[in-house]
Image (cartoon, rainbow, N blue to C red; front, side):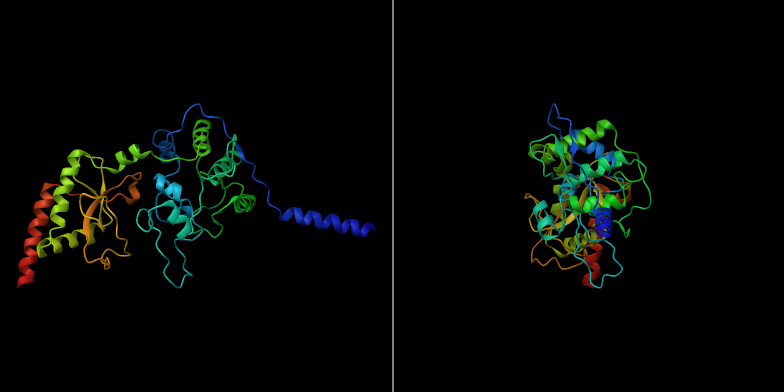
Length: 329
C-alpha cells in the first residue's frame, strides 16, 4: 500500500514537471478614449520594436514597421534553412499576398494581436503576453535571433506557455528594457480595443502622394509606359536595377516610393505583379511600371535612396536614345 502511494506521488510529481506554467491573462486598464494606431501606437512600436522587427528575416517573420505587418502576424517557417532541399515560397509583405486573410489562410501566418477574451478587462493575445513576460522577468538571457534553434515562434497560448516555461527571460523586447508603464498601457488598451489600424482617411493619407509629387510621378509613369522600343528598354533597365530602391523625386521630400510592375495602368490603384526576380516574365502581355508609396517605417538597413529628379529624367532619356541607336546597328 505504501509502495503504491509512493509510486503515485512520484508519478504526479513527474507529470507536474511536464506541465507548463499557465500564462494568466493580462489585466488591462480601461481607456478613457479610443487608442489611435498612427497617433498612439505606431510611435511606441517604432521606438521599441521596429529595430528588430523590420526585415524579411524578422524574428517569426513578424514585421512591425507597418500595421499590415503586425496584423499579418507571425510565422513558424524559418526564412533561412540550410536543410531545405527546395526553395520556399516567398513571403514578401505587400507583394506575395495583399490581405491578412490571405497571409493566414494561404501562407500559414498566425495572429499575434487577437485575444480570446472579449468584453472584459483582460487580454491574452500573444503580443501582450510576451510584453508582460518581459515585465515579470526583465533580464534577457541567451541568444534571440531569427535562425536560433530554440526560437519556436509560438502560434497560440499553449505553445507560448511551453516556450516561456523553457525560456522565461525571453519576453519582449528581448535584449532591451521593458516597456514603460505608459507604453505598456497604451499597447494593451489598443489590443483590448481590437488592435485596429488606420481608418480609410488615414490610410489614404499615408499611401497617397502629395500634389507636387503626384505630378512628377505622372511624368515618369508616362515616360516609362510609352510603348516604343526606346522607352521599353529604358523602363526595363530602370526597374531591374532599382526594384529594391527607395525612390524620391525631391531631395527635400520625406516621401519614398518603390518602382513596381502593375497589372493596372496609371490613374488606377496599382496592383503589383509578384515575381521572384525582377527579370522574370511577369506573365502578362500588358503591364505597367508604377510608383507605389512606401508607408512602412523607414529603417537604415533597407533604405537605399535613388533620386528621380529632372537631371535623372534627362539622363535616362538620353540613355534610351543610345540604346535604340545601338540596337539598330
